[in-house]
Amino acid sequence: MTSRPQATPAQPEAATPAAAVTAAPDTGRTPRQVAAIVGVLALAVFMSSLDLFIVNLAFPYIGKQYTGTSLSELSWVLNAYTIVFAAVLVPAGRWADRVGRRRLFVAGLIGFTGGSLLCGLAPGVEALIVARVIQAAGAGLMVPASLSLLLAAVPAPARPRAIGTWAAVGALGAALGPVIGGALVQIDWRWVFWINLPVGLAATLLALRIVPESKDEQARGRPDVIGAVLLAASVGLIAYALVEAPTWGWGSAGFLGVLAAALASGAAMVWRSHRHHSPVIELQLLRHRTFSGAFATSILYYAGFGAFVLNSVEFLTGVWHYSAVEAGLAIAPGPLMVLPFARIVSPRLAAWLGGPGRVAVLGCVVNAGGQALWLSQIQVHPAYLTHLLPAQLLGGAGVGLSIPTLLGAGSASLTPARFGTGSGILNMARQVGTVLGVAGLVAVLAHVSPTDPLAAFRHGLWLIIAFFVAAALIAAATLTRRTATS
Image (tube, rainbow, N blue to C red; front, side, top):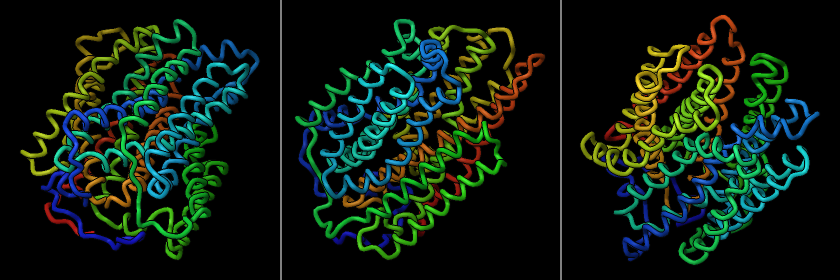
């Protein structure tokens, strides 16, 4: 094995992710030990996913306390986290492969937990934004290390179910953000951040005790630091352009200028990757049909998912005038569908349909169908049980079918030496997609009419459906062939 592996042929799609991954020999761990490792790693990704959405409901309460702060300044409490998290993921995954995945995972946990403490103690909005940057950097370190540790530590036969659990718990954290956030802001908005402290401390101690270390033992030479900076700049600028697009305008000089700078940084990173002995991304990885297909599908899927969660909260609080707690409880049944569909239904469907790619397509279609159902039923007067609840349940089922299978399909082409790098790329797709979906939805909802409040939400639902349908089409084209080429 070398530090720059040659491109490998894609695996037959009918194979499970476990069979497709080039793995180290069986670890010999008992099922109880495997469950403990997966539990610790899933706990960390739950925290990071939760934080992507939990702050949304705290936003108005933070604004009330920090009087005199403009909305644009306050928006950076959300945007700073989004941009830094997206920018750090891939360089962190590459670094984890080289210096040790558990080492970086624990460092990320400490940074995330410490940042959460500082967020709750922040005396003003400037200090809160700085603390959010620290928190986001910690999340960016621990998330790719978390998935790569799982791939390295779990024996191959147990890997599909472990990936399903990890992905489902992460999706559960994102979907439960409004639920938990709505309850905590009734006490104090600072508890939205402080809730991470006991969980982060427990996860750190358990990781040091339970999770085994792993890394690329064959890595030689210094990594491409300049390439890592260029990649971080490119992804960060893309995220920055997307979060500001609703304010600037999608055709504005500011949006197009930042997007051009992001593309230039990305092109420079690709140029260096062709020439450096230890690039931040091996380009052979992106040439693999299954991996690149999972990456592209994930961007579109998470765009729909991010917009779906935010649209539900905005509709319930803005049109049906639910309180934060009521909105959270109304959303809760959907997330409860995620884990059983990810752990039980999805693996059985993969065996029956002939591979995870087909399950991913089905999940995207279920999500689109749930939103189409809600579009056909949407009305101004609250009718939760007969109108919104069925769409929420279908949405949760779609998440449980889609997210684990997309991760499984993407992970299938990774060699053990590239677990961290590949995990970082797949998680970057999740983050960039979420930012894209939220930015698009915010732009649509900005045009709510006082005479027809449903019009903007109907347009938002069409946008969400379009994201899910596009994801289904990409997955069908790239992940469902029994014999694919790199």
